[in-house]
Image (cartoon, rainbow, N blue to C red; front, side, top):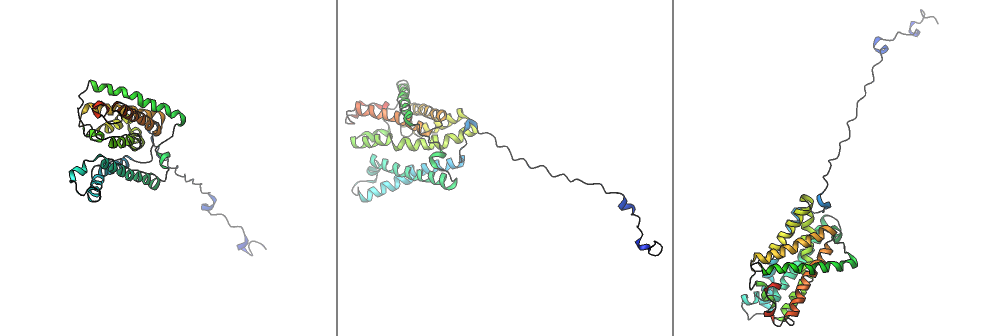
Length: 290
């Protein structure tokens, strides 16, 4: 059919709008947001717990060992074991003090385990870098023995003639219990807290040097009352803490510092046993050992 007969079939001219092709508009995608770069921890220490967690552990330890533990232990012993003795006499018994400290430490360790494995879902000994050194660990016992050289400083520092710690060696039975505690649970708990929990938190923020210093300082001050507030004795303990923390920093192993701690305490106790004829003549030991 012709166009005049059916004009609708004739090709219609394109409109000016359609004739001009619209330019393609490319909408750029926003660049992916870069994740914040986490600063590398100093000294290679990056514990899963925070400094606040460490403060909570320290507060719990002080509460239990200074107040709750002694109160419950002395009260129970006064009621069930020593009903005819005064409260003061019962409170002065070294065996009860050791029992109180033992029970307090058990609670603290359980709290630390629940914190690491419950809150942070990590293995306890792996998280705090226990890292048992194997047969080579015997050498760290020797490091503890060498630390006895610090005790020579006691000859040139003001040292007390008697200390509150002396009462633990008044009787052979109490002395042997104290010696057993000093080479087992005592250094174990101290190393777990100071070198396992405290040191890596400080070293992560401030580096190795400050980590060693700020770990050894409270370690020394913790023994202040035990040694009759003698700064000379506390200085010696502080220096021991410096070596123990340095061992932990260099080996990345809390077990290594624990063995060095056992070596130091064990040598002191062995010398005390030998010089006092089995803790029967404590006047021969001298204040330096304690």
